[in-house]
Length: 281
Image (cartoon, rainbow, N blue to C red; front, side, top):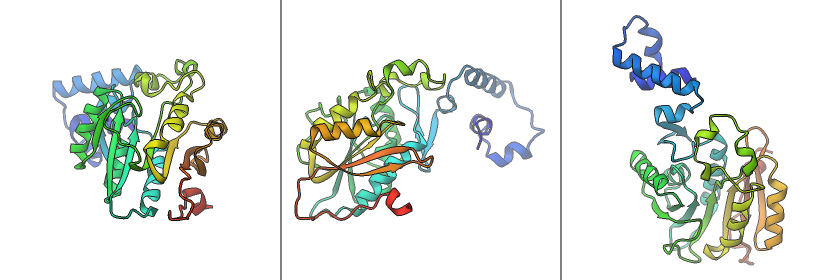
């Protein structure tokens, strides 16, 4: 549906078909005021998702407000990549354990819980307000996530050598670029956007601090911004811990996800991973 259809179906509680078949229905004053207010907010640049209070991600519905980043289609590539890795990993005597860093509204963690029935999902965010929304979204989507409040790995609840996969869509916009973005993005929480002077602050911290929490041959899966691939590869090379095994492109052929493996097993006991790029040529 386009934005107008999203707005009117939500406010009027109509399905899309009824919008066009019930043309002669007169709206009461309350509904007219709601529509007028919503249109003014949209004209001022507020994202439609905040106006209606929800967003779609991988076919699931999520509650959103100004405390959380709006889920993006590009982040679906991150989740799809993690799902393929999770399905291809052999876990003996235990459930697959996945950690989502910077969970926001919970769209990554909840989607993984929906599509990986054998997984135990953990999620961290520095914002208590974000975690509240994420908790509401677990109930909305009928899944169980273990949430923790903390700055990256700075929480006492994390145990070393625990996770098969660590996934993250970190802030990656350079600080100086944020005020140049379209008005819609400036409504979103700055903490979820601002990646520091060069946009790479969180990648440095994630790449440096995640190894102790990964199981042998565990995977670190990161969403990246346009034209950031080479700079992030250099961060991996500088730390010399991970082996980059795939760069996954989005549907616009932009490098969008980096998959790196903690190279601690030498016996080849991890199943082969075949990412989107390899499958689709």
